[in-house]
Length: 80
Image 1 (spheres, rainbow, N blue to C red):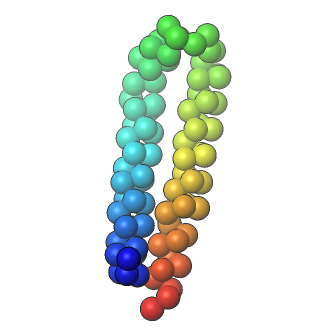
Image 2 (image 1 turned 30 degrees about the horizontal axis):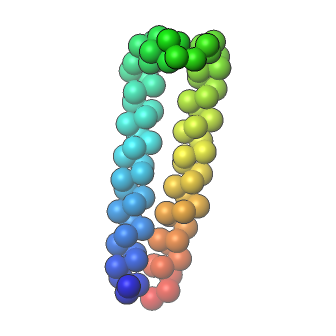
């Protein structure tokens, strides 16, 4: 695999993963009550726990994107 291919791979991985993160955020902002009721059928969670779970999940996902997609992409672009 060439460096150009790896750069492109990590760049597109970052774009796709940030799209998923934005979609998750939009779901929580727009349909928070519906999602809470849906999850409430399966798991006994308070609203505070539901919010903390989603915020923690989004935070971990964003850190994962930074560590596993963006940092390697930047490193490959610095290799010129």
